[in-house]
Image 1 (cartoon, rainbow, N blue to C red):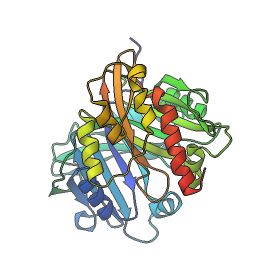
Image 2 (image 1 turned 30 degrees about the horizontal axis):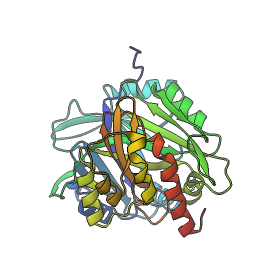
Image 3 (image 1 turned 180 degrees about the vertical axis):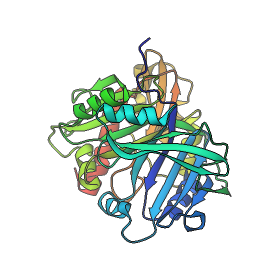
Image 4 (image 1 turned 120 degrees about the horizontal axis):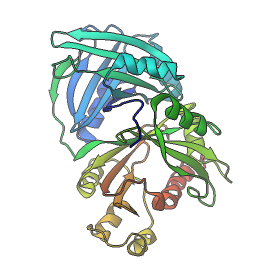
Length: 362
């Protein structure tokens, strides 16, 4: 077994910086069913920003918003729109992890420091990755509180839809930059390249992209990295880079153990999903073999299926979740499969191109 040169316990949380944290929290509570469990702001001693913590099983999301002019994130929100700023890791030793990352080439954002309250101490640091994205490094071994220092406990339950954990987070980077960031994750965080897809794997008549899937040493954290490839028209990655204003997090995949229930409830709450032509389902039995689910139900909901050597997976993608055609979500249900749905790429891309055509950006 290969040595894990940068131990990461898990993704602790994903932090978005947004214009209005209260409204974002309300949306995710009432559509994705998250519980609002914490709040920070003026009342808890923060002078220039406010935020909410949302949780569902092992998924934790924080929405933060500037509340005074001149906040350093205000300019970035103006550039990117609401965006994922931080994919935060829980680690064994923050000081070791930070020093190791910087010695291997990472750019420091926040040096290791301690935050505390009556429940104990939390160690925190952060490093920069692609675009304006960062990775915080956190350790809670000496903290016994319900949330973390600075947060006030909130009890605003959502109506959970079965989301279990973050399966993976996907980054879009500029043309020619994918291998640079692949090497960064290899050198700095000890990730390994699990799978590579080139423009022959991920293409349609009009557009293409290239992607490499990076995974942490223990396999718990997976980050596909995409870049555009030459095509006849503007690819979804080009569109993202244009509207986002550079590299950033394209989508977050949320794992469920019952995708039919999860997607049915999201649809009922108004979450829009990409659509798939009927002929995709006519060909499904020959392509993926026997599955437990009723194909007619999958067709009605627009859920995709793919198989690898270890089993199969079901997946579906929302339309962009903000006004800009940037961040979206994937709902994924793994039945043994460890892969990322290569057999669905063509159908998925054609669906995205239909949406691009409606936006006039193809």
